[in-house]
Length: 191
Ligand code: GTP
Ligand code: MG
Image 1 (cartoon, rainbow, N blue to C red):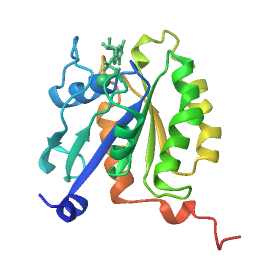
Image 2: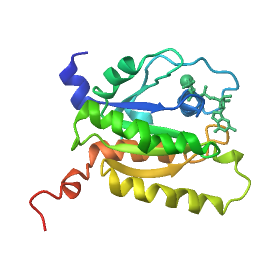
Image 3: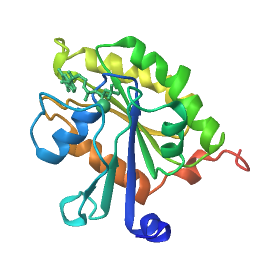
Image 4: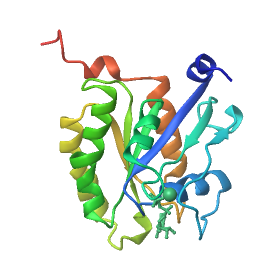
């Protein structure tokens, strides 16, 4: 499969984020429709055929892991991605803080300051939070990030364990690629 075909007919969906936030679990839960209790650091890229995806476009799920990859390895995946799911844990504030301290700047460094690759903030492990009301405050936390980093298309919470919002995550990611909001982002030339 050539690079051109990949670009037009296949969505490359990349998951990045701190260690232990649940990237590999999210991929395997999505694919097998059950939570894997034991996961390797990283899965091989998994291709989902078009007919079982929300927008009927073949999608390759690409895992990364700082446990076995360098920043350079991960950067070389960032430049190939059509959409980036930036994963943190809703029960680990440091993983959230590192979105704007480390991950979003790294993505800009690799793709350019005004790049158009959509980024989706994914707060995983929502099953571990006891108070439902906390979800609002947690999603509100994402608003300043979305103002500062216009490439952030949307933000959601999910759980690889309870499967909550996994279908939505997939849907948002495909939509972000197929119906880009890029023109709205670009304030150059506008008032
Ligand atoms: P690295 O490969 O080190 O970057 O980690 P990762 O982001 O791939 O995380 P991984 O999938 O290995 O999950 C880390 C731990 O969190 C494992 O013990 C998982 O079982 C657990 N975990 C993952 N997702 C969830 C979730 O939605 N809820 C809960 N409660 N635990 C989860
Ligand atoms: Mg992993």
